[in-house]
Length: 354
Image: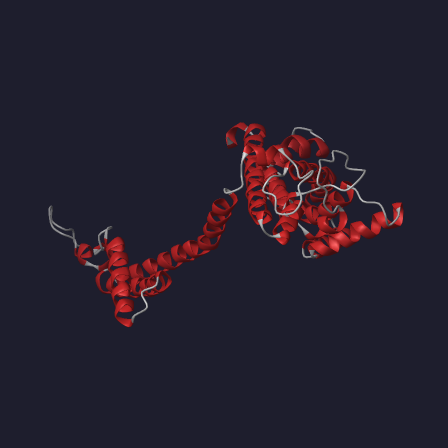
């Protein structure tokens, strides 16, 4: 065995593992690739932004990978290529999201105001610019709240059964039905609620509870799946420690399992709410639209933001601006509900998870 003399340079330091490109090289490759792509397309006569970005991305991947392979070796080059592709996929996924948000904000801000939020459509006819969405906001919140009251207990208890108690054919059957319900079209849920209340209360019955039942049918499988996954993430050691102290199973579930998974459960419920709050087809079929506020879920039609936006966009003229403003309001409501859910989950989560 040989020992290097003090101050001597190890031969390994001359290998590929220690030959690295500087950190600023990534930005240099990116800027150079975009500039070269712009010049090439300028010569070709088509210097569009989309073309520059696509061609520049291809040149960036090619130039950075080749240079990294020559300087840093194949292992570093493969790592850099994978990092580039993953980052590119992330940025590509952000494009439709950011463009959608920008479009809704820019178009919706034209008609969005405090007056728009606090007035309804009573007495508004034709292409009048007045009129607001107070009745639609009230209807959306009431129907969504009723759907959550129906679906959350059912979904939570079903998930607890599947994780903590379910064994055998019954559990497999429930899991299969939940998978089937996850993929049903929203119009089918609306037809189910319409047929159910027509058989029970007659064909002329219309009420917000019909829309709540339709939305609960869409919301329940999402709640079951998300809560089930959160409960499975709770370590079994926590359950076993509770059982060793003589705590019964139901109390272990309430005090240990649910408390540990509360943050994920609340997040899953909010995902389910966001899934149904923008549904149009079942609400259009069951609750329709009115021009004033209706606070009674069990009597009369109710306005909702998705149906309001659909009807206003269909009417054209000033209604298009109101439709975009209604879409912006719906996004703001979902954002506020998510912020509230995060605060609730943070407050009730175990101290070690805060």
